[in-house]
Length: 396
Image 1: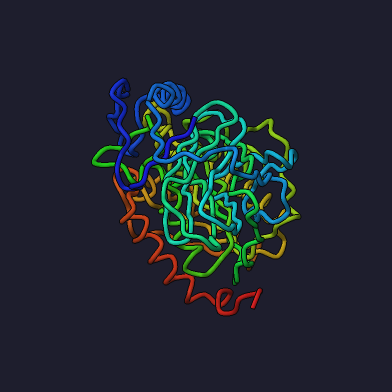
Image 2 (image 1 turned 90 degrees about the horizontal axis):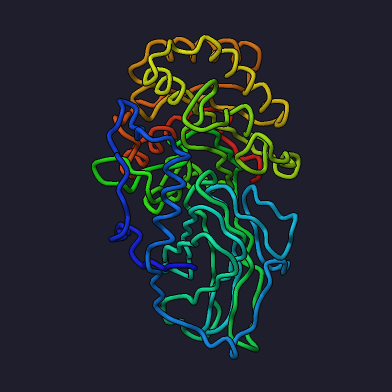
């Protein structure tokens, strides 16, 4: 079952929903584990009534399978089943051009919560793909005759849910075309936690985890940064994840090179897409989790961080690597995290001239909201424009 919501800034409320406790620690995390909240969120989503604005007469349509070569796929996407590729990571994108006044988007099996921005020409609608299988939804706005451009953007994070894309339906006798190839100047890859995901960035005064509709990766600092440089990009980040500990049962070193956000997932083919610049932003959950549980800051953080970055370097021998710190209170306030991170940076930069670092000046007590994401991106973009390695695009 799928719902379409026209206004991406409005919040979806379900009258049967039981609101989870949302008291925040100084790092802005809810008291429940993310796993428990996700399970609750799935129940809430399945209890809400779907809203469909428009339907298509199936007898007058033609299906375009997800395996059609004219679809453009961007992101770390599991395409082992070509007719139903799994859209896993946030910022995964699917695009195609089509003809006519009819459009519906089809999905296969979906688990957890999945939210997408559906772009058709200049219009954007939010699609919620609820847990289940084999759902098709009509595009909710009238379409003129002629050629249109479609892009599906996964705005919710991989750890919240995965949906299999099945293709589109258009009017019988109408055509589809491969979209014009984007003129990318760079390839960026972002590794991080909820700050990099864009978690809670469209929430109100408090962070909430019941629905991931307001966790919009399209409005994250990472996406803004990539767009500023006309970069193709990947976002491999998991809310609650740390280097040595965190709020989810996986660590950064266990999933950064996996197809799915699981330590037991198959590894992704990292040779198929090599980034020019890699951004790494971890530490918030190591300090938040240890502080909340009355534990000392993990002494293995520095070694774990160094090991992670060295693994990234082996996978991407030509990439520039930018080590980041910040976005939330832990990076600003915890002297133990600062010292451990600086020790890791010193060691890594001493052995690799293609590694540099940047500390965000803009911080948030809770998770960054969209305005905070803009501020973070603006300062990072300004810093990047002053770096020698960003003076000339390797793809120009």
